[in-house]
View 1 (cartoon, protein in one colour):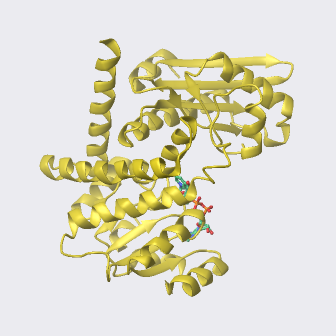
View 2: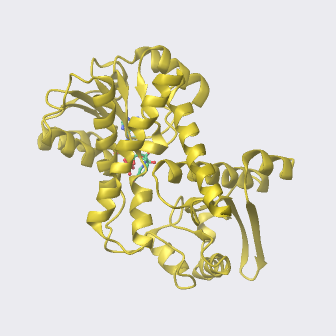
View 3: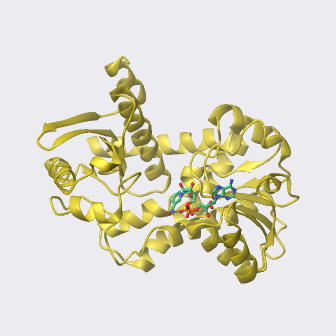
Length: 349
Ligand code: NAD
């Protein structure tokens, strides 16, 4: 990898390498952009096949965080930390050494939990630094607020794309009934939505059927249902050349990360079918809004109020996409870039 060329192309401000032998630790922290505020990004611990793979992951994910924060309209930038280690080699000593490294950045980077890092691990890291989030008992985990954000995103998309169709009688297919999917189903059913659901775990599907009167369908059936909205809340890559031709929904709006297998190709395929897609990192920003609020002193009412940014931003994205005849993910990139640029101008004044 041509390191400086890559970093310049992606626009990173700084990439830090932390190395020690006692304890044996290798960490990369990528700080993509701090125009709007300190770089926020979770810590991932993973046994990468090589150091280049770890670096690529840190660069890609920190870049994504900048746009996520900008689109959520929160004063934060994008960062990411990766610890190159096997999960079984995770010790208190290692986590505390990492915490001291984070602390040395004096708040320029603020972190939380990602793959192979538990809330308890974040508490251990937090013994060495105050620059951690996701440890407050008050915010009670990100799923309910993420689900609320997705609900608002569906509302924005329906108002924009199906203006004569309110929530009452709207048909929504939800894929995945975990922490977010189940909370989303609750809200949708309270607003008179007719639910169609699938989960590979039959107990979860049965629970949502009993609680909210949802119709349960087989996992592969969910794509081809004659519904208004398809809400992917299970895993990424589900919008691809095999599934898009099957879709009958007019709106895609769900929590799963990286829903488009290929952003350009599959974003365009959806647009050509007249399907409006709520970019995943915009609609699922509730978790980020939650931890940001934790950082500034958690107030549930305020955090839920800030969620309206998701609704407003999505309407703006749909409008840009329609006026400029570009895909919604191209529009969200454009909007994020404009906000980041504005932050840069304010920074230099
Ligand atoms: P979760 O693990 O609690 O739930 C995922 C559910 O999907 C599980 O019930 C699982 O059985 C089901 N599932 C897996 N494969 C499936 C398939 N083929 N068909 C149908 N169901 C399937 O996860 P979650 O916290 O609810 O998050 C859901 C998605 O949203 C994930 O992609 C996650 O990365 C993303 N996300 C979550 C949050 C959050 O706050 N939890 C924030 C942003 C993004």
